Amino acid sequence: MLNIVIFGAPGSGKGTQSTKISEKYALEHISTGDMLRAEIKANTEFGKKANSYISKGHLIPDEVMIDKLDDLMKKKNGVKGFIFDGFPRTIAQGKALDEMLEKYDEKVTVVLSLEVEEDELVDRILKRGEISGRSDDNRETVEARLNVYHNQTEPLKNYYSEQFKLVRIPGQGTIDEVFESISTVLDRIIG
Ligand code: AP5
Image (tube, rainbow, N blue to C red):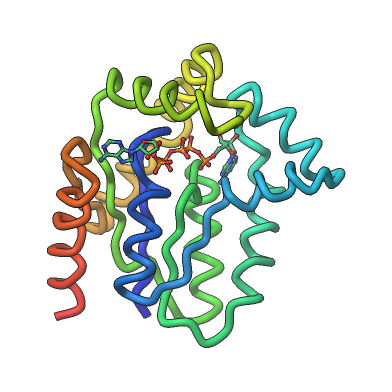
């Protein structure tokens, strides 16, 4: 299996590139953000609780997200591989993902880290906020999301680079240019 973690700050293009990767390489796209937004839209109890974290730019607690990911993976039998988008976001989630994959005799193949400057991230998110209706696409929450990213998520870069799995992808070109860089890396891995 090809198991990809797509990694990067809010607005770095994880969702956009995951869609393209899943189409080209026939992989299962698991987006924890999309899953949470579906719960919010359906107005479930879990969705209401999740929104109270998301609208402040905070992370949902690890144990809750780890259980959710476990559930999502159990439903996906016989796939060629996964793209994990938005998970892991903490070292604890990274370790939990390794354990979950081990149960299937699998591991993370590669971590694609989308590198985008902070000004560009903020511009992209505020622009999307004009039409997305996302409760976290506003200036105040963006700052909180970026802080959370730097403090809690970015340490995963070290975690994966120590395992020689981290590949940095320049994330500021056009969507197609970024995808070309990603494809070059993945085609090399597939051989
Ligand atoms: P999540 O949905 O994962 O949001 P995020 O990480 O903040 O990322 P975004 O969706 O904002 O951006 P993206 O990197 O996917 O970029 P996109 O392709 O959309 O999580 C939301 C919240 O849910 C979290 O803050 C947290 O509260 C909670 N959560 C989720 N997972 C969790 C977990 N595991 N644990 C705990 N809590 C969790 O692109 C952004 C914009 O830029 C788009 O408009 C796009 O069209 C545009 N764009 C993309 N690429 C380019 C390009 N190359 N050039 C110009 N524009 C571009």
